[in-house]
Image (cartoon, rainbow, N blue to C red; front, side, top):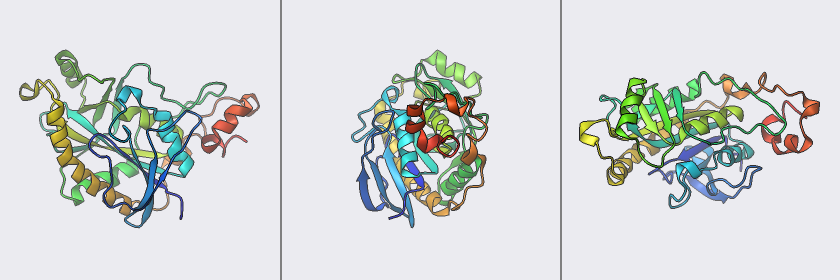
Length: 287
């Protein structure tokens, strides 16, 4: 069968794609360690895709423990060119309601100590990241949410907190003052690494609650989140399947050439082992 060119990352509540046919599990080891679990390769709406549950089978990996580099590098090894991600978020705005979906186009980083790059160890690379998601893919995703009957908010600021605890009331109020729209724990590192890997990336942020700033949600509970996630994940599955079906076969966005002018280190100074390890990413630029 042909290689999958579309990757799907399932977040909390989205551990499977019901329509995925011709399934096979693919275990990979990367230079950065093992991904969250096996990639499930299959056919979705006539296209080959690779699905990965972000938190592993049974949701056993916390946001701070995720091996983001291995997850994204594994998609690159498989031949994936676009990633559709889904994740649970809290809303920081009154009119962004639970069970609705946001397609963020900006991030604020509140994480601590997470590794968000493939580079270093003898190679210096600075990719452009002013627009951290693929605009073309985000448009397709937002349109698909509408097509399956969901309520979508186009664009927005995603505050990426560390977790695993939820926000304090002071933090939640601060993020609202900053102009944040939703808050979650996972998507920024994926977006950064996807850009370095020249993979288009967008995310469906599934609103489960109002975070603790809201007087009716001052005590966010896992039970509340799971209940809303189960409802939202059905919409997300339908929207992702619709998006996969409508994604154009050829990319015309800048994501595909993100490294073209980003590699600073002269090729002869890059260690041979680094060249070998990063060949799936830098091979077309550095021999």
